[in-house]
Image (tube, rainbow, N blue to C red; front, side, top):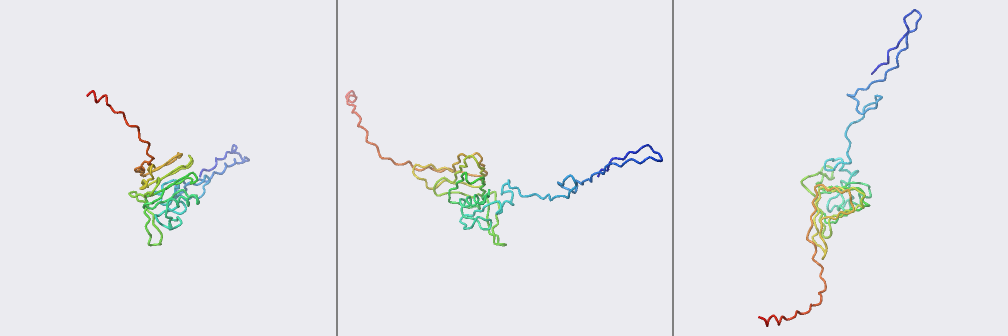
Amino acid sequence: ATGGNRGSGAAPSASAMGGSGGARGNSGTDSATVLDASASGDAAVDASPSCDPNASPATEPCLLTDEYAVFVKQGALGTGTRANPVGTITSALAIAARRGVRRVIICNGTYAERVSIGNSQGAIGLHGGFTCDADITDGGITWDYDAAKRATVAPPIDTPLEINTELDNKVIISDIDFLPSRAVPAGAMNTGALISRSLDVTLVRVTMSAGAGGNGVSRTPGDPGADGAYASAAVAAL
C-alpha cells in the first residue's frame, strides 16, 4: 500500500508546531491472489469457467441437459427430457417452442418424417451425431457425440426438410443426412430441402440429396391430325 505524503513544518524553533501529516494511503491489492476483484481490495471471485450457451453441444457437454435442450430418440415415447426422450423431431420442435429451448439433440437413427421449421419456432438448432445408450448405473441415458455418425431424416413422401423463418430467426443444423422421398406423386419434384425467406441458416456436416421426380401426369390424347397429301406428281416423275 502507498502511504500519505510527508508532512511539512515551519522552521525549527522552541515554540513552532510540527507540520501536519499527509493523508492516509489506500490499502493495496495483491494481483497474484485476487482475481477480478474491485479496486477497493475486495475478496477474490470464483474464476471457474461457466457453460457457454453459444457453443455447439458437440463440444460443450454442459449443454446436454434439460435446461438447454430437448432430446429425441427414434421411436421413444417420452416427454423430451434427457432421461426420457421424445420419439420424433417434429414433436421435439413443438416442445422446444413451448419451453423456449433453443436446441434439439437427436440420437442417431432414421426418422421417417418431414422436418418443418417456421417463423413461430424461434431460433433453433438441430444437432445429430449423438449416441444414446442406456446408463446401467442410474437407469438413465448417456448422450455422447460421435463425429463419425449421423442422424438420418428420410420421409416416405414429401421433402425431408423445409425452412421458412420469414427472414427473422437463426437456424443451425448439424450432423444430419436428409434423404429424398421414396414415393413421389406424379408430376412432383423430389428435393432434399426447401429453404426460403430465411437469412440466417447454418449447415454443418449436413448432406442433402435429391431424388428422381415423379412421372409426368397423363393427359387426354388430342385429336388425330389430318392425313398428308400423296406425292403423286413426284412418283410420276421417277
